Image 1 (cartoon, helix red, strand yellow):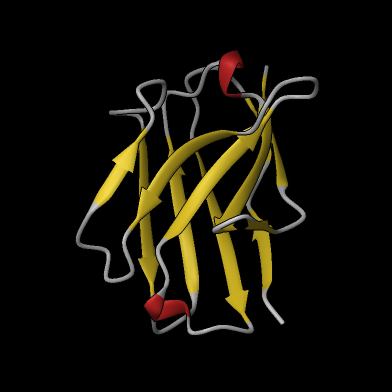
Image 2 (image 1 turned 30 degrees about the vertical axis):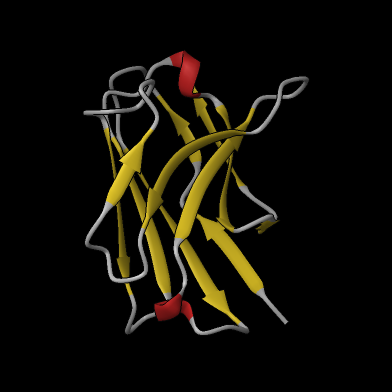
Length: 111
C-alpha cells in the first residue's frame, strides 16, 4: 500500500524559506518519478515540480522556477522541496505525489 507522508510546512514571513520532506513507503521509491503539487482552497491542484526516478531531470512550474528546488534521497525513500523567497502566493497545502496518489499534505502559510 502506497504511503506518502509530508512534513516541514509552517508559517513563514515573505522572503523566508522552508524545506518540505515526504517519506514514501509501500512501493519501490527509486523506480518512481515523483511530484510536488499544491492546492489553494477553491482552486485546482497545481503541479509545482517533478523529479525523475534517479534525480537526473527536474521540472518546475514557472511560478516557482528559480526559487524552489526538488531533490530526493532514494536510500532514505524521501523526497524534498526546498523553497526560498516565499511570497503570499505560495500559501497552499503542499502534497507529494506518485501519479494521482498523494499524501495528506503539509500546510505552508506565507504571511
